[in-house]
Length: 238
Image (cartoon, rainbow, N blue to C red):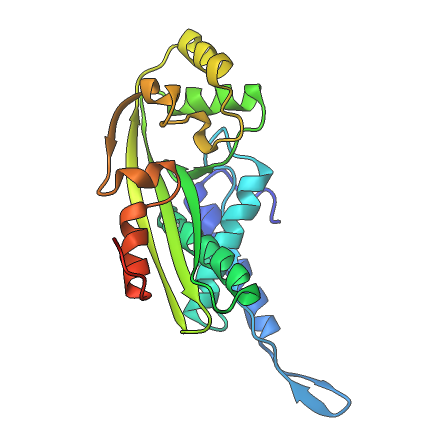
């Protein structure tokens, strides 16, 4: 954690990246133990905090972790700064990890894994958990559009099949009043739902529009893509 990097975000980002590159250079230097030479492989992700008033320490860790996975995919000794476009890859990586974990225990089975990331102007929204957090989420979303990245992965260890896909859904929220937000939350209590709204229930009344090539993706599993991947895995559908 690098505190007090300045008030200019661009300069703070440049400073953080310089420190990161220095750390990588130091880690990649060979060293000796008992006369034997060793080298370490390292990748690094970084992010600048805060980018919005609603960001939390959990957001900071998640963003740096996301950037680190992108850095690892790019190769040894790489640093990547968190960017809004990385959200898509997060959902797909998590869906694949879920499917692979189950497939390892059931190698003969064809396993489906899914995950979803809700993206409001580059900030990922999780499950609120409490009424107060749900109010804050809906207040931040009112009058704005947000993107849901919904990923599915299909894995079969026995056949070696492993494919994934991410569908995007853009949702436009109405300019909700505080009274509408409170009324909705008390009626449906969607505190275990990412973005604090259930479009399959009363949450649809909060929206102006939904744009997607797969409307099922908004609920959490893109069925059009899932069916396509299952056919590729050898499942006969319908």
